[in-house]
Length: 80
Image 1 (cartoon, one colour):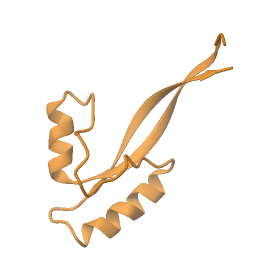
Image 2: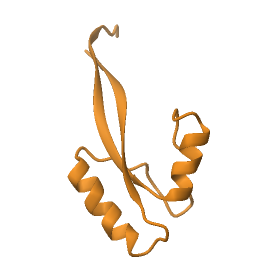
Image 3: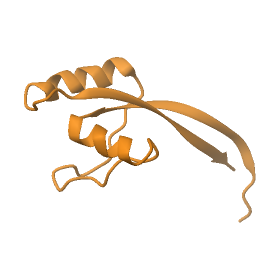
């Protein structure tokens, strides 16, 4: 089956991150997220800043220092 590229676009996604994770992202030159921890079964970005902030607020109660909501652009290619 042959594929043809229909569109390439950037989608902004959001993800709550803790201070330690943010530091690792910064050390990568803002190019990648660090490997997941054993307690993180999936990479979990969300589509809205509001929802990411809500998740971060819930995480903030369990984590010190606070969790943050981070945005990043993901390029997606749609194929047919």
